[in-house]
Image (tube, rainbow, N blue to C red):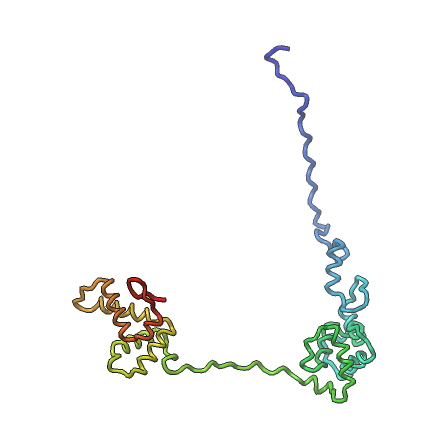
Length: 261
């Protein structure tokens, strides 16, 4: 074989062409199923289960239309219907779905009405205890279902926080300024007032804010030549003199100086 001739690899071949895409459905053909019967079995079962009646009996897998399964749905409830629920419970019926079918009602509203026939303290019981409890309460001579249905939960209490008076009713910004004023005039005020102000400043964590405010006042004083460090030290000493007990409780002494706790 000549060296210039091409060598063909017999193991390689041209892949077959891709299959042509199917044409879209014609306009006359429905793109989606027109009824539940055209759905997949799992989706059809899920859709039917949503409308299935609440019953203790095995479910056949099909639900009747609302107009046939609950012809009295949406109509006012009568005393005769309430009495029918009570009579069924006393007779030993434990299937709320069967009672609902006898009344021509949907099961969930029937269960809600059955709970209203219980005293207020018993209305939160599980569903399977409603009918047995109705049977038990009817054996009590003082049970009057008409009176029981009038029971309503008490309204939620209205909680009004107590109005704060004195120093506790003063806002933080105002208390800061008042605390600084009390510290400046501490010698002219009563010891009780200074102590109460110091306690409130300590309770709200404002002692360091008062010190910082004093520092800024010292730096802004006309003709002041203090550095920030010098003004801070002087403000700290002033705060210690103005509120000695509160200062001692809120600060601790290290090897070199007082520091906040």
